[in-house]
Length: 153
Image (cartoon, rainbow, N blue to C red; front, side, top):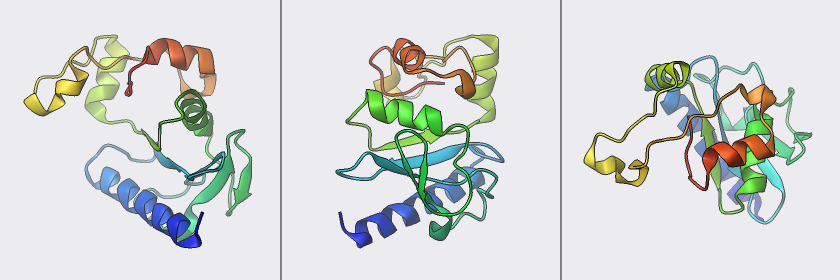
């Protein structure tokens, strides 16, 4: 894997994160990660780093056990959520974990988030809701709640 690939992915994560903050999907919480091609490592932002001011230089390299291999600062607690997805879904290239107000509301009232626009056809069976915090996430509970789907609240 080339250094330019890693640099590009770092820049894309930082840009994506800042855009998600601007759109209200992330605030002080939430993370975007990307799988590094050909290795069991991901890129993710450090804990307690401003999402609104995130740069490519801030991004960590973390293994699938959550150990920081490159970069400054500890990995976020939610790294377990990301690595769980990457272990369970070898086809997953990126994971976005945010707290948009509307989807958070659906998770609190335990109601399915239904697709109501034509471009949301891929979510016609509703987006599943994971019944618990990321800190209590296990591979089994994630697989149960994803039920073979590619998205979850």
